[in-house]
Length: 442
Image 1 (cartoon, rainbow, N blue to C red):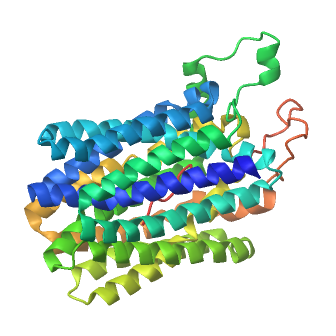
Image 2: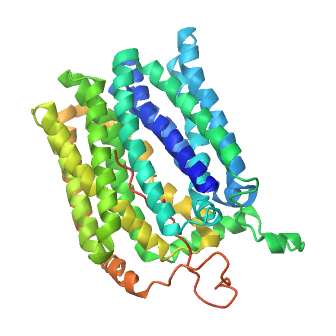
Image 3: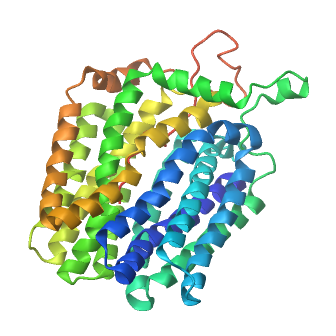
């Protein structure tokens, strides 16, 4: 159990710290600049390199080894995050330097997150744990991080200030790096054919690996439809999380603790939704359950922020929405399970995840500019309407019917010691790449 337990612990620690930073950093920019546009620009400068670098590093992670990339990028992130409060305390941190530093953080986080993701199947095999259980545990860990991180971040920022939250984030990156380096065996996470390499057979180069992943993804209409839909909803969610929610907290006077309470309630309910989905989702029609989850988790979060209601009502709506969101990623993971072979996990997963997250850098940037031009309430109303229309109109496309058909026709997952079906001329069946096209919500 050591490899899987260590990997899950590293994911839990690093993602919890990232969620703390997701509250601390926007609040730091808001209180030091008072500008919604600059807050959105900071979010853009972090997430744009995250998405771009993550898309390009799939072949490198496959070849160099995910373990090395994971712990080394976490070290870089820890050092840069810790430097932000240090430079601010010395009076050396101007806004342009902050943009450069958050860009470095995003560029390091992308490969680091990808490396942890692609090691899940191998960690499960080394720990003699079924892959279904391992990916289920990963989903619970991520949802718990989305619950604990914002709650702790809101309290921490309210009591000690935003710089304390950034120091906590730096510490979690450092701890995650240590866990990966000590708990995971050397060489873990390499997707190359070890036998072929040992025999001196030439290995494909970077661009050939990248092209293989791109060609495979291009030939999957359902995956592309999922990615486009999730990419747009992630754009709207990023706008809400990174800009609209902090501005709502400031304009209403509720403060950062309200942000923590709202996101923590959504995260905790999402944990419950994920657990329920693990029990009942396989007995229900995927498409119906998927879009019902989107109906609960999308537009209501925008609409409630636009209304003049007590904080408890906002928390309650976000809890219901979080429960609906908990069903989304387990269904997406099941679909990807049936479609991506293991040897392409890093490449296809990186491309799919990056495309689905491509709108996230623009979400905060556009939201900040829109609020500065039109005000908070109109932007929230437009965002809610766009979310509702996008998720319901997308459901009319015929590709979505394959979500239910795939369950009946899907090949069964093979054991690690079973013959490679590709070498036998069969269609490959790999473990779930739950991250490809993953919905990012809090």
